[in-house]
Length: 463
Image (cartoon, rainbow, N blue to C red):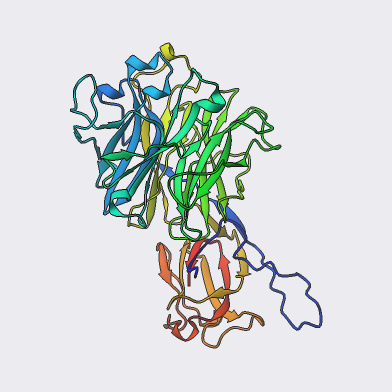
């Protein structure tokens, strides 16, 4: 049963019929004065991870995963050395590990696992590329951490050269490789692993070119009941007819929306071939397969975003972190070089990771610039209270009433005139009516909620 609702589209809003059938006796319930707004994060100008080790002498790479487990933030990121840089060989990439208590100050521990020029005094884990780590809460402890990565052989035809492999671990540091490839996959980039809890399937978002009508990098998706073999992926996103002809969908940047059962986002890397830049674009989905770009042709994060210094490549990483103060963090990679900058002209060492901070559930909101109101679709009351996450400036307001699912008549005691004022400056707060917020008498029944708002951003509600 869904309890938290977010506004990535109009799925939760009753559209009404405008002028309804005159003999129905129903009121006009069409929404008015509202729109969906995408909110950009604040970028910390100071990097949290820089290439400051000998095995990072070329760069830290864009592909990284950030996960918060038991109040500790763990990150797996890729590194290249200057000695290997001239070879333009992704298979020279090494996977490194770091961790943090606050998401700002990261430590690169000595792991004594993987040799670098004969020494194990480093934070390296494996010689792999195109990685993503997934923390699988449903798996046995020895398989709790799952890792996917790419291997390919440039001496073979590209269609048969590349495969996606898997590893498992109890601690995210000591890994056991699986034998056979998970997937034949001609995409030498970061692939994202996640889990569809409703269907009980592992899901991989990958990047492919093979077999598509347009010769552009594209986003594909595949799923499997087990973490051993995946069917051929199906393309879900490609260069749109409204896009310029030189744009490639480079990596998916896929995330589940934390705490929402039917909301997914991508912070997708868009490669713009002509100017040789990467920028991050924002996409939303209800099922993880059908996607929309609510910002259209506008980038979500680019090198004009405050916090950057006109870097050529801005890329997303995997992971949304709950800061437990009403904000979330995710991390972006940037570097001064373009995708096709020749090795001898690249900045060395290059690349870094910066923290991006956004309000909890703050990627999108249902907003009113002036007066607005709407009714929700029919909802099952599954909690004892109605809580909302809204930005309510001084002088603005949002009110809520609970109404009959068919007649739209307010339930006695839960009408707009009884709704108490909600405060400014809070993230989540409970709605009350004449001092009472108790919904126990309505629980496990189906109603609608009528919201009336003025100059407010409504990010989410839970009921």
